[in-house]
Image 1 (cartoon, rainbow, N blue to C red):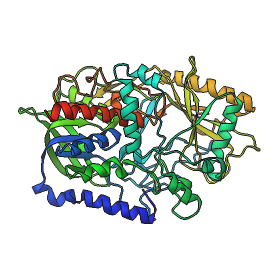
Image 2 (image 1 turned 60 degrees about the vertical axis):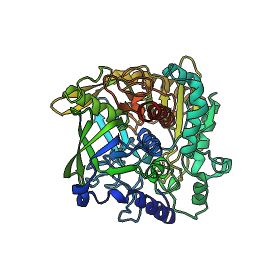
Image 3 (image 1 turned 45 degrees about the vertical axis):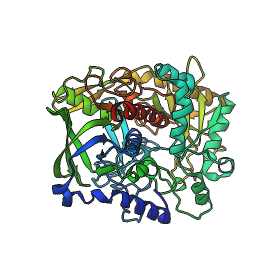
Image 4 (image 1 turned 90 degrees about the vertical axis):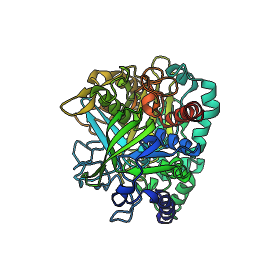
Length: 531
């Protein structure tokens, strides 16, 4: 979010937009229950869909399971720091579940917290866990903001039936502009002590013969310059990222969602969990919902109906709901492709131990600004984010999140005992990612006479291969859907989020998800709603 003054302005403007639907419990009797369109989820695909539907004059309801992050906690801030987590950190957990589990083999990272509707969730499946954002804005609340457009030739490879020229000349630019993507000023990158870790990572990668690239971001670098000058609240420079950001981050609540609500045609209901989706005898979609409070208790049961239903709850959320609907007979005609072709974007994390004369800095910005780009390597493509480790003390650690070209795919199966669809991913399916990352970082270690760190990820592992920040697939474009996200077997039922992308993008995926959502919703409005 923002500093005290910026946060105040943002809260006022958003509160005015949201006010017509609050408080829910007092207005249930007069609550509108039918809408032309319902969008489930407020992440990138949902925010794009809602804005364009609102602009087209379509009355639209957005349903979000998480909360609206607009109320300061006891410390006066909306979100907590990575190094001082509390209940705001995690979605209904009694302990944090950060990607790093230990330091010097000591369990000093994760801490007990209050059970609360926090902003970050880690969904744990056998052999693979998935990090997702919980709240109005979805993943934009908790990611590092790296706004990367994928290489054109790889986009053509993963989505060959999509018009590449149109994407790169129209929809990618539209997404970048609307998300307010910008690039770090050279003065910050080259001179700030908060980016020493980046400069060290760059130097060591280039010594091994690898190219490095500066990566655009949605973080407001004008705000960051004010942080360094000590004129505003330190957010990127104050250890805030995976549990939310109180400063210059332009999350979706500041861009697409604010504009969507500003159309006057979009209604938002948060802390509303979708329990079931069916189609009634009139052909309308019926969505059964539980309204919950921040303690997780159900305070009301509701039913909404719509003609057009947009599944935008993310790769895991949309896929899980649809597989569950198919296997429980709620939407029995959903195709068998729903629940398949899921991938983790080849994510694997690793860390290196630097020499004492290569400190990475006691101060580290939580906003990454550079990557090691070896994606053109025909035998071993890797794009690796030079990641921060903002502990507040010197660690001499270089940390990386690598994106690899992993062809392995998982699938979702319905578990009747749990009453939910569960991701099936074998431990062996992460091995291609480990092999690719190891090939890159073995070279970097050799060139710099350094070694891996084995104390950070548990079980003496040098590579963390059992979680992902970038879930993709499950309802893939052209397989479970047509070429614009219309789900096969039903009319007016759509997927418009990361579930459409077949498992890999080669880079951080949210720009791709946003641009694809722009492309799809434009066609759907033209052909399904305005005719």
